[in-house]
Amino acid sequence: MKNILMIGTGGTIASGQTAEGLAPELDPSRLLQDTPRVAQLCRVDCLQLYSLDSTNIRPDHWLGLARAIRQHYDRYDGFVISHGTDTMAYTAAALSCLIQGSSKPIVLTGSQKPIQMEITDSKTNLLDSFAVACDGRIPGVTVVFGGAVIAGTRARKTYSKSYGAFSSINYPVLGVVQEGRLLPYLRPQAETQLAFYHDLETNVSLVKLIPGLSPDYLAFALEHSRGVLIESFGVGGVPDGEAGGYYDLIRRAEAQGKTVVLTTQVQNEGSDLGVYQVGHSLKAELGVLETYDMTLEMAVAKLMWALAQTKDPAEGTRYFYTPVANDILRVPGESL
Image (cartoon, rainbow, N blue to C red; front, side):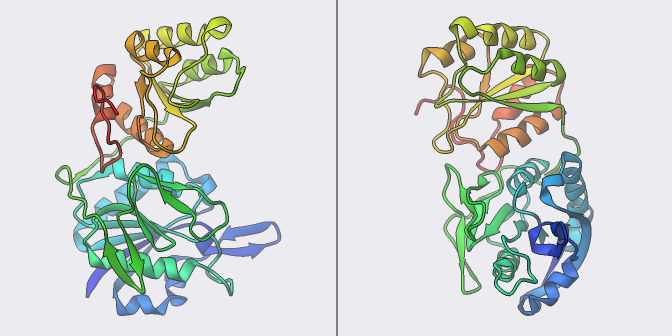
């Protein structure tokens, strides 16, 4: 039997009812008591790393998870991380950046209902996750939820209450779990040798455009951040004309060595700054980066990772556009 390490971080799956609502209280060993069939699949050791509502997850927790996996990497055949659903996609994206080239499965899962409820999706999700971790044919960071196996770089929570809470954005699901068995659709190969990274640049912020938004909000973000993502409309662009202060702000920020990245509020298909005038000059004249088909969660995590690797903006651009676990299908210079 294979040896799997289960790492607990809290979340709905481990929550109990309090006078103020659900709050994490169960450790991984307690979760496994309610899922005895896991013992038929593998030997499991447990590590309670955090006990958090995932709303409270921060980049230092991502680094802690990566350190824990590195510390135990040689002793186990795979890893299962129980996690809250609200920021699971961010954690999966961050771990995809921090642990690259893993030949072992690193599976994140959780549930929409606590394990102690009579009707819950938690037990199925746990069983499916251990099935994927034990099988080994889909290595690297994944989210296993509602029967789907999703690349950690492509996962997004798209339903707030339904059991099939996560979707794979701009990329096929890697497989499904049916009746406890993994049916792989894709078998991703490690793009690099195993590498663990230890730093993230957390001085990153996000500005979401709405019609008429004052450039003052972007000015504040640029003043206080080393990297800023602008979540724009459609295929990408920022307002010009009377609101043309955006262009001047971006130009000054990049002259100061800061990085500006354009992403889109549209979930599917991604950005393409060259299509419209409002986006073309951002790329051609100002050198703004764009996320193409990346998820927002991956763009945030990857920008933090890229900026932590170098102080040179040009080198940071190279890191940002280097594919990590199929996080980006388009690269600069390619057309649709």
